[in-house]
Length: 420
Length: 82
Image (cartoon, helix red, strand yellow):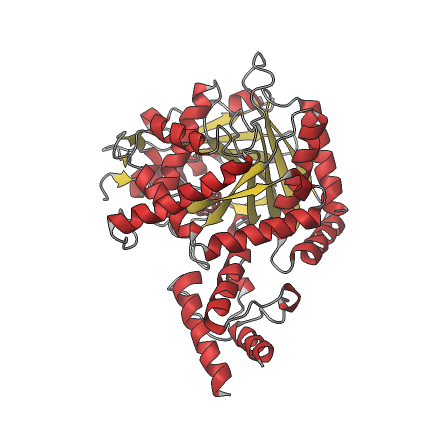
């Protein structure tokens, strides 16, 4: 069996956000995948499968340890993840969002709830520091399909690294990029409702086949082939600016950390890792008056970022920051953009893993991604396709936006996607 | 003919090295999009073409036919370079 495992840079960043969220009274940086199952699966079968996987993969029960040299501390006697069964009434959102006790190795949880028609809802909650959304989809597919082999965690040193001096130079390039963004520094929306309970709420928008086709055609026309994510991001930023302008808190600029997947295409490995880097995009209000202009600005920044080697720079920055204590890391990250390192949490996970069409023999009728957002920006949107239909989850913090404001944002966003 | 083969070969090398997983059996006829090629991969490849051939393929030329596989992409590079 493998020994303790190092966290990589993005894992560490996600752990930092976990502590930040807990510090503000929220449950932490956890994500959820919700499966609507056509028939109920046996809780015993799920527990048995998880017990099998925990023996072969004790990381499921690891705990984060080490401030200067962060790692997953693997248990000598691993315990399978918790499975909670809710019979009768649907479990409350508060119950489903209960914090994971990661310090005791609780990195994930499964909640099963039956409905009166024999269907079942499975809510899978996991600590983002353990894995990103594609990793979680693949992990869940492995849990639900016994013929699939769950990959082992990544090796400690997955790829050769340049000399330290070169790495520091690359990392510095990224910091310089952040300094450039500071020339039009964003203004944080802050916590508008500090006395509101610390809750994360979400709403899910599903587009039917006709609307999905229309949105894809719009994306193709404005952002070109494979431009769906850029179209979604630009549209969401335009609507964010519109909302904040209406609320009287428009920003001189909006920063969007665009997650770039680092997994080689055609491969899911490794599962237990955040294989991503953040490219910081920045749009100014005049660029957000029109979706087409916003897309053009994003495309140009993306090309410039790749041309300037910012993906590797961001990766090296993450690797170096890994060795700093988390509070210092968060302070440095925030200082870089004068308090605003993200104006909108944005995710686009593309098509759901095709093996999640069934789970332990039950057909998966619906699929939802839910993520956590920090109190500022307090708003996030995730796009994904399930069975070819576009879905969008809008998450908000009750301390920053009201339900009515978020509902308006989601409705306007939907409309703009259809008619950019 | 040699030219298009050389370009095809260099694109194949680049994509094997920088885009796709090493265990994927990538050939000049592999369906790129079905194999996971995405918008970020596209920008990387466009940058590679710009660096090695001196021009940027305009967005209007990027369509399903061009990105069908490495062979069709190489043919587009040759046509635009002519």
